[in-house]
Image (cartoon, rainbow, N blue to C red; front, side, top):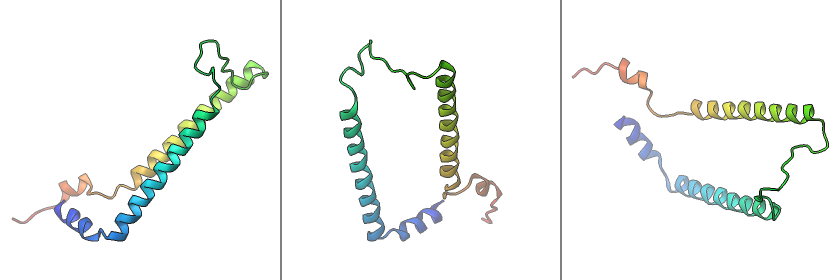
Length: 105
């Protein structure tokens, strides 16, 4: 593990740090802008108990429920794709390496 950490520490450059900080600041700014836009677009009585939150108003109930179910299936599908992408990019030491390595001490 210390070899991996030493290699990682040696690979850090000022350019890498500045790139990481700038990407963080850009994404933070975009996130705050998106939150501001969403908050402005929310109707004034959105959180009131009597506000109608009907999905696809004017459609038959079978169409509305079908759309809700499909929306949730797509959400689970895209969430699983994102989780796999994150899991496949794991670059740290593997647990199997720890158990298969033989140290001659």
